[in-house]
Length: 117
Image (cartoon, rainbow, N blue to C red; front, side, top):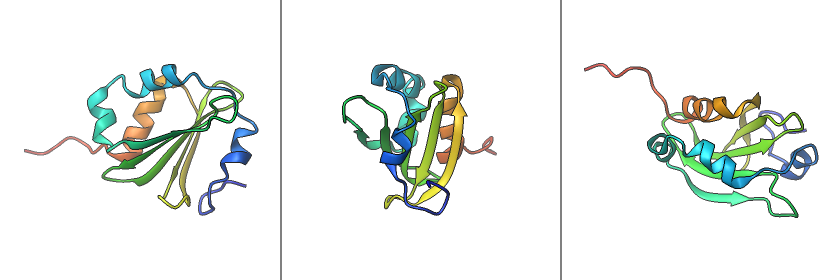
C-alpha cells in the first residue's frame, strides 16, 4: 500500500499518476544547480512504459542517502518518496507544488541551518 516501512511499489503508485514532462521537471530540480548537485544526485531513472510517470534519482546527502522518487499525481502536484537504496520507504510527502519541490527535497536530504563560524 506504499506506506513508510514498506517496499515501494512503483506500479501501484503510477496507476494514479499523470504523465510528466521530464524537461520541465529537470528545469525545476536544477533551477539552483549547486543545491541539486549538493544532494549527490546520480543514477537517474525514469519509467518509460508509454509515458513518463516516475523519476528516480539516487542521493547521498547529510540526512538521507538512498533514492528519491518523484511522481505527478492527479492534481498536478508532486508526490515524493524517500527510500533506502533497497526500496524501503523512509518518508513520504504528497501534494507539493513545483515551487516547493526542490526546497522540500533539500531540507529532507541535505540542508542544515545557518553555519556557525
